[in-house]
Length: 65
Image (tube, rainbow, N blue to C red):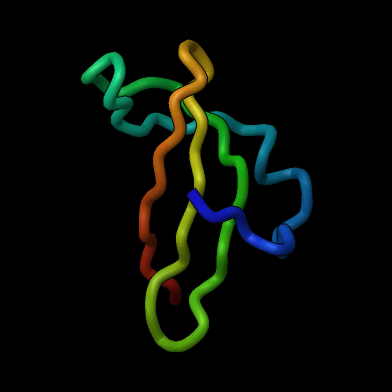
């Protein structure tokens, strides 16, 4: 899984867990944000999450404003 070259939003965003579907547990789990890759054009940002229980990683594409 590719990682972003830089973290544009600073370290504060990575401290707050969020609920995201974990494929290992097959339910919503508390996950920490590992990084954000901003959209190059008018697309969607890619957010990298890591499960706080099992360490499983997942990505999600989020629409920008």
